[in-house]
Length: 335
Image (cartoon, rainbow, N blue to C red; front, side, top):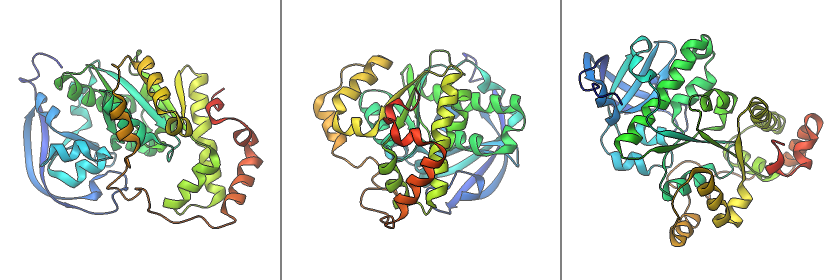
């Protein structure tokens, strides 16, 4: 952060958060919060390290931060966006044109965790935290950027918003006394993984994968999605990362089964890639025995079993378009 951040005032609009609505997995937006407008205000730039970036609003052209009632609850929630929403007290919107303070170089090095979803990415982020890496799980500002054509319409604006979201997390990391931070993304963010990683030349990226059949069973357990559509989704996830790799993104591929069966080996890979200190065996074992998504709608023991013919149709759909995905070890998907 700059030394004069205490003197820089950022124009904002203040809201009281009356409540929230919608499923806890809904993408963060103004619509999932019930707000009472309290009028315009000015905030010192350094105050934002005590706020949480909740979403980018494409329609209003605003970034929206929340002040929460229970910081410990936010930190302990398996998903960052969910922790913000559950504990939000106040909201502050800032126009995109007033985000110049967040266009600086990052004050800490980012570690990016991309995945195909339902492949242990939340577990991996918990391992990262236990190893000493400050980690944010699924901040939805990046999800907004990935799924909104309006936010992507202007390449310059899109890049400035991506920078703002990363600088916001880097500032919080530096204030906490750390020099590196992890960000675990939703799978929807894969199409912009290259754009995200390009903001820091020394960033490190991981891509988490899983046996496609196990993945399909897990996805269908929690989301009602047709087998053909699910096959298309898997292919897109893998091809997005393959394209990013062909353009220079160096991602460490980590398989879910390897993480579960050989956690010590995978943590050692993490340490070697990032340079974290040695992790206590007892700490790792405690994490592996705990449901990393406890308290969410996709915790262990929830969901439904896929119909008998579902996997057969899924395999057929994948084989028609990309048979190599079924025939190749997931750890070799990126070549």
